[in-house]
Length: 228
Ligand code: FES
Ligand code: FES
Image 1 (tube, rainbow, N blue to C red):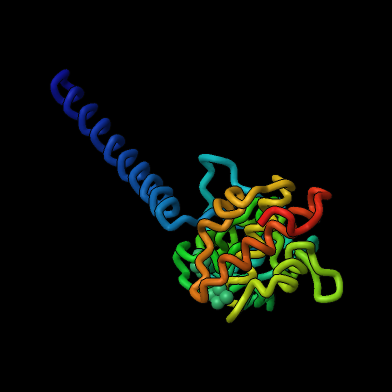
Image 2 (image 1 turned 180 degrees about the horizontal axis):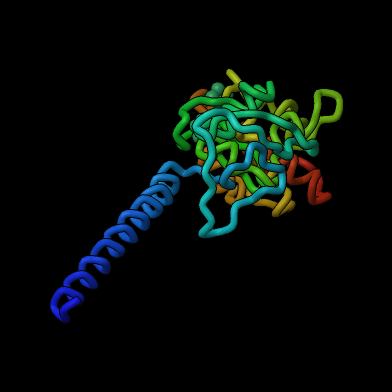
């Protein structure tokens, strides 16, 4: 082969291999980007993911589009469900696990009605995918207390008539309970800050504050109801 022909054929080979690489990298990159945009996590080829299967930063999972089995930790128990990756945590709790105490109102993170605890922190369950809750301890209003063993915040809401229609109440209770867990002697301002994301369309705020401060009294060992 003459020198010029050899040079041309080498250049053609390099162009071909660079085109292949580019196409492959593009497809791979596009897949990763699409998964990231869709907010889905995944372990390639995995049929089932466990309760402790949290996704590390920078790792992209591929899930769905059909239902996929997984474990969640809810109210101290491991529960098994199969949901599509697009299913939100509030949807999974209410429609797949029958925990209808958590309310769905705005479905866009604006009202706080769907507040649950995730590792002790209040989160709006409509703004989180069920798959994102894997590996975390979820507590709903049902797990906080029961009618015969109420949490101090639940009893205080009953004692202070802190509800009317009740739609915002589970979310309010969860927000207040999380605040008192973190800060047992919460002040009125602390309580107001804690429920700032919870909207009560019936306007029961004065009673909610009274109940929260009474519960803070119980939690901190001070005489209940002495702060308002
Ligand atoms: S229903 Fe989730 S914030 Fe309103
Ligand atoms: S009690 Fe009705 S929205 Fe709060």
